[in-house]
Image (cartoon, rainbow, N blue to C red):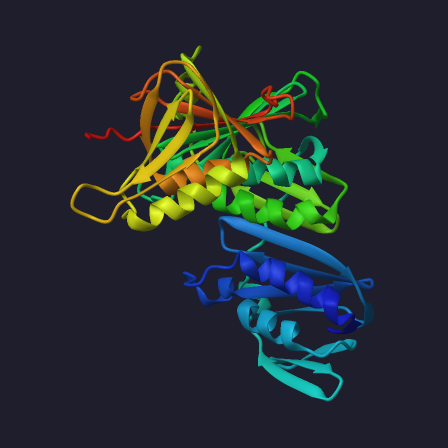
Length: 377
């Protein structure tokens, strides 16, 4: 294998592929990235039996072939190279990399020991890349991080005709985004539970590329239990989580509410951050709503305390409700709107935060439900 490639293209390809490699692989070859040159195309790929990543780059190929090298080491080296073309050649059991006057010699691993990458499932449809990235970032924040409850670490993707919904919950909050997409089959009806971390990493990478993202999802036959995403020259597949017993979380959204408030997202964000400085991670912030506005408080009778008043438009009976401050901040950050509409049933039932437009009306598509923390005063 011998080829010449632009430094930026190589660094981007290796960095993206190496990012999903395991830090403690079960076998050494899984820490490697496979570089394969065929007909002027370099294919860089990584696979850990859970997630596969592939990206194609145009190169000046002198000799076709393949080499398997440490992904993280190669990513560090390519990121640090000067802005000049890079010459790479496989020589015996080593890979030689030359860029300007910089020269590196890296040991290679046996190509034949590397597992075969899974096939991409059949295409299910396409969605705008930027909208896909935005939706995933809004929802993935609510996914659980406790690996002992794998079902809660996923994002549930629901495909029903031209409607696509994503939901995630860690049992203390729930995020849901609904949008339109372009299915290959207008009668499609599929659900999948995708690992949230993998989905978030994929969306962050494919979103800035622009254009469309193709979602590939098997429904019986080859590729069952897999989901794939294609954007530009990048392709990734992921094993799905078992979502057969995923709870009916949509029913958690209250059918009606007794009080609602409209607040500035940036103002509430700043106030909560300030007031929460005196609170432990598990200590709630109290939001007291009335006709006069909103007062945010934190701290107990014996510890440090803080309170701050701010403007808010409130309708309903006066209400004091406690929230985990970080969960509240996460929801506000995900709205993508300067104004938040907060709907309440009472101080002990979940509250729903939605983006509001300039006219004060709810912008449909995204809802963030947050469980209150009972507080004795």
